[in-house]
Image (tube, rainbow, N blue to C red; front, side, top):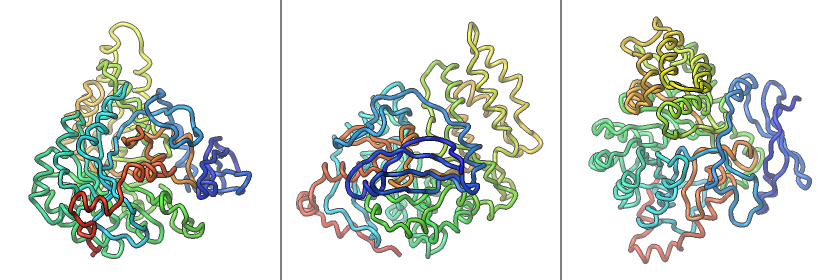
Amino acid sequence: MQTLEKTESICPSCFKEGKLQKIDASIVEDDEKVWIIKVCKQHGSFKEIYFSDVNLYKRWIKFKVTGKPVSYVKTSLFNDSELYAEHLSQTVLTNLMVTNRSNQKYSNLDPASYIYEPSLDQLRELMRQTRAKKPVSSKAIQITGGEPTLRDDLLEIIHMAKEVGFSHVQIHTNGLKLSSSLEYCQSLKNEKVDTIYLNFDGITKTTNPLIESIKKVIENCKKVNLNIVLVPVLIKGKNLHEAGKIVRFAIDNRDIIRGVHFQQFSFFDRTIKVIDIERENQRIDYVEILQCIEQEYPGLISREDFYPIPFVFPISKLVEIITRDPQTELTAHPACGGSTFLFIIDGQPQPITRFIDVESYIKFLIAQNKKKGPLRKLRIASAFMKYVDTFVDFKKAPHGFKPKQILKDATIMGSEYALREFRHKTLFIGFMGFQDAWNIDIDRLKRCVIHYSTFEGIVPFCSYHALGYGEKILEKYSIPIQEWEKKTNHSLKDDLRQNR
């Protein structure tokens, strides 16, 4: 057993008892896998999988970067002792919860006994809270729940988000309302929603009881040209085996599906009391997702085609140098997730890494970032035009695709149009692993780039869920169900719809 890194975590047993106890932890290599190991003086030792392929971990961890500290992100709440002193990443995506109501029945979770549903004025202030933060205001927002389409004023919320200044708005939904109304889909498009972030847990009725409704969502969104990203939450023993088939489904519907964003099932909030054997049987890591994709596309897609989130950090730094405008920095921890882009040629996927030497390209950008002195912008542009061809194998590049122009526009000009055109010609495949009390790495937590805007301030995603802050915030700023039903003259039961 070899120690790769020292870090800190929390004791899951103390957490079950209502205490947030910070303890030392280590990232270790054992049996060609990577684990997080930690010891609590009271409850003993804990060991959870981190990466089940040590080589992938070592390839990814070298892209770890440290961003500039930001003071606006909360490092502790509700009188808990501080887990870390300062947050090290800006807000790349703002999550805004607009309701905790749902229109589905879940057999594994008890419903909350309260309703959280801020007013429009309150939501505007929550949006302004994150838009006002410096050095770079959050440009992207995900409107989430619960089920956000249960709010009759969702279109007003979307309009407000654009008005406040968010350039990218996505709606996280199960799609039931979108499947039943083409007119509603058109309304979302009219309000300039950028992406439907669509729950999609499998391609069969067994893994995804809503599959027929989701197919109708895709049909409706095609008619109004409303982009979709599929969001599968994968669990071992339930739907992990369909990961490759989900990619194939996305490829078959690539005219409207722009990507697949896999998520690992995490044991937080009400699942914290799950027994150890159940957690061990359901826990997965990135490598298992990649194995399923590799099996579906042998030789066509490989784990070597995927890179961690901070891999593109040098691009934003170079654009900042050239444009002199502060850029959003993707300084998440490498273990927070990874991705690749696929071109589809004759129905088969071709990762961008097969014809662009992305690592050499990034090394080149890092060298340009170090240039100083007069005419720096001109010298960088000149170097780029001279060497860009060396990163591209034009014989393997898709017909009609102009990688040189895309790289030039995106890097030298920071062209949003160029990047948008690129995204429409490719399929994004990515995954993100959210932490829980068993596997939380505080070094990862302090680099989180997805933040909730709440009445208690701006909170990292994994603090919101893994540390239970979200549940406490919702309960604090909610009202009892009976009071809400009387106030709105609406029965909560009317929202529910059996899965089918």
